[in-house]
Image (cartoon, rainbow, N blue to C red; front, top):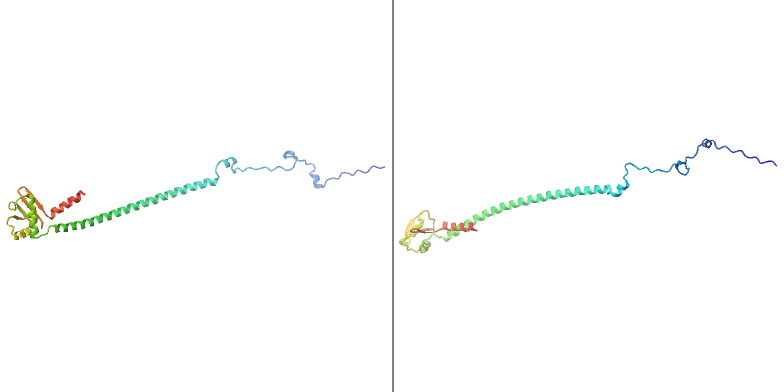
Length: 207
């Protein structure tokens, strides 16, 4: 019995036959011809340790902006406060000037009122003049004949017309109308508008 014929090995296809002599590169894991993927770290990538320890970049930027805004608002507030203080100072000066002006007007009105009151207290007529002379003589404690009475020239005429012959009357322009100056040796009593004004000024100065 004849042995079966052994078929001759088939030659590989032409293109494959050309690569048949190449062997697999086993340097890259399990004899695979493909290299494993390698993670390439970027030089600019942040390190994981630094990223975990420090705040994120946007946090630092937010804090810097917040601090700058707070400082700007504080400066603006200080400028407004200074402006308000200057305005208040100007108002105080203005009110002070108004007060001084009002005080001057009030002083003038008060002086005019006092002037009129003083004039009313010393009416210029014979009876009032004679009564004031007798009150002054009573203060000195002497009789009219021993006294020298200084009167305004016009008041002296009124006194003479009243037939007061017991008095030694001396016309004196230095005495104001309605006033008198009564002398007895070294003693003297004066009464008039000028003396009253002096007393009022002294009283106001003591306040």
